[in-house]
Length: 381
Length: 147
Image (cartoon, rainbow over all chains, first blue to last red):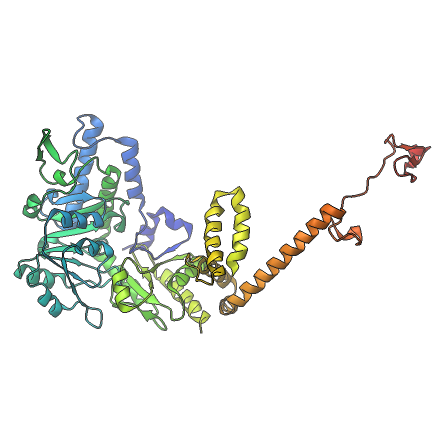
């Protein structure tokens, strides 16, 4: 993987910044920006319903984007790909379209995959002491559950849960599985068919795509049985004053005019990621993580191989660290509770600093980061 | 305590630019809470502190460390200096308005750059005739044209 060549694809990197806030939102490559611009300048129309040149072109582009997403995650059919606003909306779509009695989650869920389930009987699997997933506790809690809605790769520390085992155990107990793959799809090659997962959600903005676009993948038979919780234009093919007939997949879930610029931009992002190679990206992130100097830092969560690194400097507030890194060397990291308030509250930790690496980050940047951390550690010595 | 200084500065800048109004609001919230002996909730102090330390780190990590460790002391010194200079400035403005001399009524007018200069009657002025000023009674310096 040629990092220098990749960096040239990201116009904002010319501004001399060190961007380590990729778990929140990575930067956008030129091809994504151009694709969004292309929509507004060449075919700013309605897809699916307008039978003129612009509408036909857009419909084709939307279908191509759906195909790219299908390829990216190894889905069987394009119809299994539903465009949503983001992963949060995709999770809410499932939470509002099906009635569950018991839902199981892990103890490290993003608010997006926690709050929608609190209206049901909600069981939380406690992690092991080393912050890895506790399969024994899970095996006990999954009994009698309807749904296991669990994070694939944690935005806390980049820990990837043993989802194959989780899915197998859940299915053996008659529960459906929803994976929050917002941190997985951008960094790791996944195959929904091999995993045999029922639903999988992710956001476009975490995988080099535009904001305001996300994806819900679902097995075709399950999606067919679901009723959409938002109704309107595009979701029906006929209606009377008292009734309507729902469209087929995927349209019955895509109510109203869609975020077409987002969809085509997401398609371009998916192509870009596949071109670079998700295996290469994963390897690159692991390599960068090895260069982190952890001495004197308080590690938050699990210190694995992934590109997410969560820590605190004893004596310094996480926001202070983030702001000082930004002021001193333009190093951009995230600070706070990372939408994982439940996890931080359970551990009585106020917050942390999260540095997350991606395909355009370099060893030199990580070394400079280490040097700045050393200076910050000295502040409180 | 720097939020007090920030509030006044951003408040003045906020009159001219929207950009500073939110900062003025944030710093006021901080000042208000400090007056009630409560903790500032807006992270305003944190932001200022981090920005100052971060910028100092670029040039001298040692200085940055010194400022970080004694930030509260530096803040108080800065606030006291700011208040003293504000009071001094207000007294000067009062003197300037009342006595035409910002240094005070009995002070040498040269000490105050804002003191209005005395009116010089020039040769071309109708008040200066034959080297004598009708207005003040003094002689005027009319040079060659006095003859």
